[in-house]
Structure formats: C-alpha cells, structure tokens
Length: 175
Image: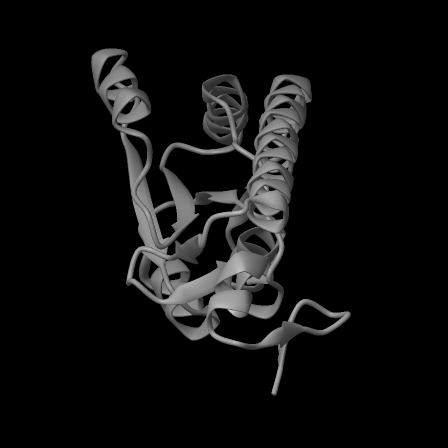
C-alpha cells in the first residue's frame, strides 16, 4: 500500500521459514486443522514441500480484500487460522482460534540487511548521476542525455550554445 502512495523505496518485511514453522506448530498445538492466510500470494514453495514431507496438512487461504478474507475464514474447515492480526481477529469472530504470524529476529535482521543494500544502491546511483551531471556541465562537446524511450533528460551547456540559448540559474534554457 505504501508504494501506491509514496514515490520512495520500500523494503518489505520477509517472514522467514522459521517464523512460518513456529506459527504453524503453535496452530497444531491448538487444533487439528490449520489454515495459513496470505495476502495475494501462495505460500513459499519450499515451505509447502516441507509441510507435505512432514505430513502437516496445512490449507491455504489466499485473499485480496477484507470481505473475501472474512468469507474464506467463515467457510474454512480449519479450526485454527494462522496469519496477520486482521486474520486472527476474523478467526475469533467466527469461533476459530488464531495464531499471529509475526516477524522474528531473523526476519527483522534480513529486512535491515535489505534496507542497507538498497541504501548502497541509491547512494551509488546518486554518485553516478552527479558524475554524469559534472561531465555534462563541463564538457566542451554537445552532450544530450536520453532516457530509455529517447526522451531528453538533460543536455550540456554546449548544446545550449549551439542552439543560441542561454542557461538560466536553475539549469533550464532561457529564450
């Protein structure tokens, strides 16, 4: 949701394999049929294979909206729902037990490492952009910087001179 509202890099929390297994194990301590709730995507294939190998019959509830989630929990044969806080709340409203799937230390650690990698990339891109800008500002040649769709992003001062234009204080051409 954040990505839809803001134009900033966003790092996702990743629920780890251990986080899933701890929550599922808690679910089976509370009941016989467990359903794992996830928003829009299936459970990780590796986790699903592991659950099949150890013969833990965990059903999945995949949803895209609140009403759909509520309906799927209501009709589910599971007596324990494992998922986010909203899923656990809905489970309780429908007479089922709920186990909160939360992010453990390893998940938080991984997310922090992802954020660090993203920050390094952003810094590297910023440095690269500053280098390109400096080259364009001080190049005696006419340099035009295009995006992948051949739209002009920027051009050197020499291009403005060739066109008989002057460059304003904000970098834009004056008539």
